[in-house]
Length: 337
Image (cartoon, rainbow, N blue to C red; front, top):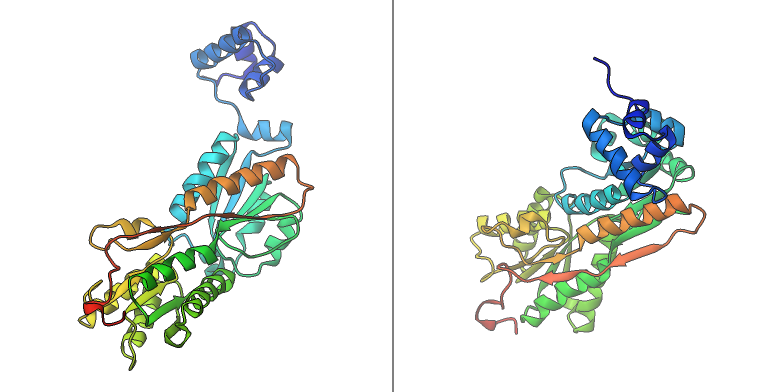
């Protein structure tokens, strides 16, 4: 039995094929009566539009290629949810590729997206320099989400305000009475912004001499190793502000292995407010980076750029907020204050 065609729908509804196409595209130029007749015929016949044929006729694929820095990072979950919901509202579908796998295989899936003739690209997270991405950004509308790089001509950047978020975390620990505070720093532009803000706030409060920075690698293992080094030093900190929640989980493991109680002996603050921070046995104080809103705004910017690609690129920042949970408290016996 053959599948129903657009001609069958038109005959059943008593309209032309072009009017059926208008209804399927959601055009407002169709009367309510005709629209109901077409939709009823579609339902009765079980008609499903041929996406490939429609792409050829419209010269659009109605797909967006999304290249993630690393699919294992839980921060991307809510960002992708916001991104996908807004793209869906705009009649677009999302194709996903893992940049971590790209690097491991020595490939660049950006080229695959271009071969599939996507209508736009979204680079999520800090990606390494890529000539393929730079070339693609010159050919199709492109947006960077959740990062500050790569900075390319005509490309919008949508991210959280990292300097403000780091300020919230650092001022929270200072307000609790901590003076010896360490920061497990991240990499790239985002890592530099959070580190600079941490150091600025400590200096503003006259605490530059007790501010400690340890380099991490954004992973749980990196957070663990950095915290072991910090806590094994002669002047161990009483509080640690980690670059992200994953590193903060590593810091928590290190503290517990060394016999320290969190938050009595050591306060910890993460960043991103991922689902990890909300697990009851972790219950991390963290900075909510508005990831869902970042995703929605990035999708909105991309849809706008698809409609009008000539405008210059802009940087759009969402405002983070501090989520105080169970890993921060004043230093034991108020010694720091």
